[in-house]
Length: 209
Image 1 (cartoon, one colour):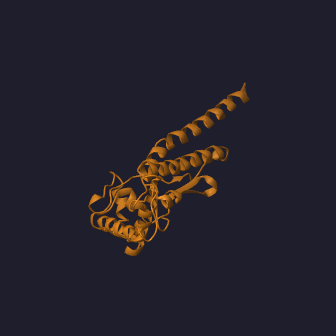
Image 2 (cartoon, helix red, strand yellow):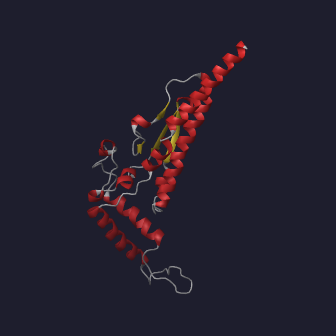
Image 3 (cartoon, helix red, strand yellow):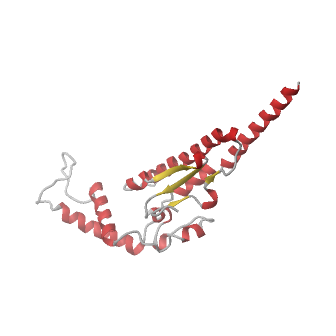
């Protein structure tokens, strides 16, 4: 397990232990395509969920090849990933079959209150939730007269407090991508093995004609 994040369930990690030499390249390509598919769809899921403030989360969804490309670790390297995936407090929702895996993240701290409040404040400023806007330009008016910073801090505190007390709704992004891309992995691997076997059989008969 990578510190500060989570990855695919241990028994589902794309890992081929033994394979004939002649199949290596085809299997490497299958493993690579599957892993990158998980990364791509997980990032797209974050966007589709409306989580536009999770830029760092999207950047930290990663696939790392191991064992000469025959294995890939697909993981999310941020501490709050489980909170986004399954929600927090009374709003936690974990899909059937993932309960034991998700339980290891239960109750784990993901930073201080000050850090959390700072991240919410940053989001409030980026979204331009508070402030006075020009009717003509539709831009936020700035300057001491409008006191935007104080208003941003007030709203950020209220939002952060609400999240702390009531939790956040789950926005699954990683495991939907994982299951979508790995469900046909074994079938595709068997297809590679079958095609190679047929070539061997065909070559055996050809040599004897």
